Length: 332
Ligand code: NAD
Image (cartoon, rainbow, N blue to C red):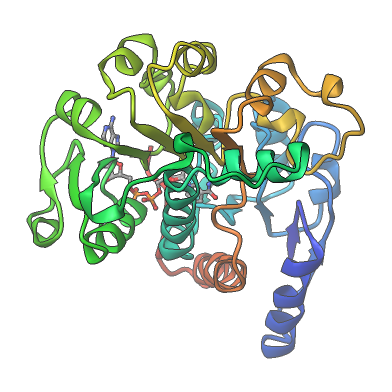
């Protein structure tokens, strides 16, 4: 018996398919986040499953889950930074995730972001839609992908898929990772962090996030970057210091940014607004810039990914309940 929090209609389709294929399982869904106000809904279940941006920071959540006899939180995400590990360990809760639901989805979104920025579509759309200006201005002149150096920080599943795509298009791809995988050298040249920052025309972040990685890209890195370079973050918001990013863009230290994630995104993702002034101040600043594009934490959001999220998380739920080792335990 599993309670799946954060349910959406498109995930529900695959939950229903799972239940049809596995009639012995009871999957109950709620649109709520898992937090101290909703944890009581989990009483009577064997496992909870979660896919949310809000941190689960309240000790009462972990304490109550254990009291209900639950010993697994099945994340339907790659990232696991929403878990408070001190409490997860204290209450002996196993956490599983879905690390391979679709690296390709995020990698393709990165390519889309890079091409959008490179071909200056933000400025083109602004000229056309706001100013009815269809002039091929000199400032719209672009470059071609095979003349670009793509720098990847974090060459894991998504970083690798991204590197392969850009390499296939003829770009030079350089990367930095704390662990180097020789198999990746067929399409990527490993180097150090600073060299990636300095040499990349397209800088793309694909590391996980933990508090030690806060502000990995801040004022110093923006000053080191080429002023023609663009940055893409589809990893986790706090890897980039937002104030430093705004300053770097205002001072033309870099040429653009594509942000699928950003610190404070909980305040805007999955919400609708009627006026720009309703957005948090840093979003307002960035929204004014045609060389900045936001996507609502949707880099992963493909049919393949949503299907795999449900199937992979439920597979590990069943394995654990059957006394087998999970395929994707998160060790912290
Ligand atoms: P992964 O674990 O396969 O790869 C992460 C890589 O980062 C690893 O190779 C690791 O060694 C490296 N790394 C860790 N710390 C580092 C550091 N300080 N410097 C350089 N490299 C470091 O994970 P993945 O599947 O490639 O996903 C990466 C991240 O992307 C996830 O943790 C998640 O936060 C994010 N993500 C975002 C979306 C989205 O929709 N925007 C979707 C999925 C994943």
